[in-house]
Image 1 (cartoon, rainbow, N blue to C red):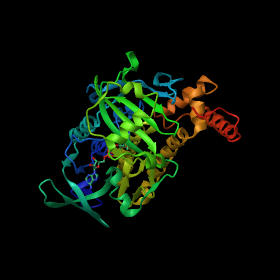
Image 2 (cartoon, rainbow, N blue to C red):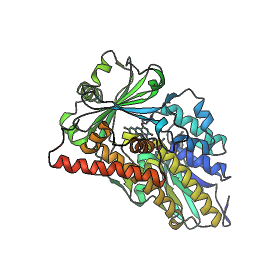
Image 3 (spheres, helix red, strand yellow):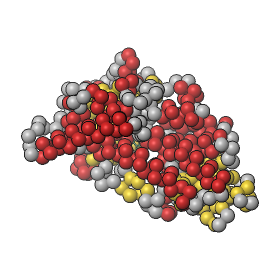
Image 4 (cartoon, rainbow, N blue to C red):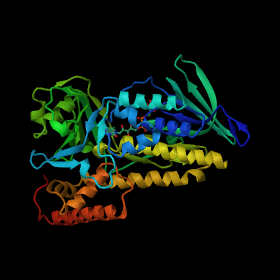
Length: 425
Ligand SMILES: Cc1cc2nc3c(=O)[nH]c(=O)nc-3n(C[C@H](O)[C@H](O)[C@H](O)COP(=O)(O)OP(=O)(O)OC[C@H]3O[C@@H](n4cnc5c(N)ncnc54)[C@H](O)[C@@H]3O)c2cc1C
């Protein structure tokens, strides 16, 4: 390929074939760029993160992948239900009521299948996908990048690219070389999760919805239907609580947190765990740098936000789309310097903070109190549900309603400080 007269093997090398990497690769290939994806695993591979958001539909549409995902047999999701520790006062976020949300129905996905479909779609769009190829090193020079990788046979290889996308998830191959992940002190949680059968499902349109149960220690549980029989169950627990309450194995820790959440425990009476349990330290972070000369980071490599509102895959894919736009424009203009990617980076940070406010809020008793008692006006509630549906660019009117919600939270916080409100639910 030609970059200002310089020959590369590929315009762009994407490291990682998860949703962030495949979205960037597809969008670049659809713009006529030559792209290679290096993925260290062979797909399908397990990944946590099954619950999707309606706004992901818009991204799938932009990638030309909406129909393939819609016809792949994933469980339909229309909303999210939340229950406080005593099991009373269910709060239901019905995505059909979400403001500004064109397609309110989304999916619960087995990530091994979802990620593989998207990666194969990248291939169909023209990207070259090299699985079981692990990036070892990247040497940047004035004219391009030489990537060194280990292949599936244990051999080493090199290739030249004009730009690199770090879509390596939490590994953050370039992000950690040029900067670091800065952890959020307000979101220090751990997650432990497994798949179960024999858990009663909701019926009708709500059968596929995510169900969440909050705990007095500010942790929470998720129940995500993955098929007619299998449900993903996870516990997200503040790190400080887990230090005191962890058990010797992930299985025992998960069983402990499930039994210790009264509103959820009855659902598990006849349940059988059908997969090993796994731990994830799901600390939230932002990369100190998300782009530089000839490189851009997308998805978890750039930022990770607590999974409470299932934003991870959508943020990764939207980032992938925008990174592709910025890289394509940069290559066209002959400028793939950090300066050319500054706008992209600002956009990723802005979107992250938009959702972070809600994630941090969810661990605030005043926020939870308002959430469970319903905000004073229905329109405020629908504006909040819109953000929970993934609306990352709300109109001025919706933003104003969201601000009112947080204003009431602030009042509740003050009242709680003076001990004039009820105990947290
Ligand atoms: C407990 C928990 C629950 C979650 N729940 C949800 C949820 O319900 N909904 C949701 O949307 N999100 C959820 N998430 C977040 C979601 O899983 C991630 O945000 C999403 O997977 C990010 O996609 P990505 O493409 O950036 O990274 P990944 O999906 O992690 O993909 C990165 C890829 O890079 C590859 N790679 C790494 N290093 C190299 C290397 N050196 N060379 C080549 N390849 C490499 C990896 O093998 C991997 O396939 C959850 C996360 C956690 C921890």
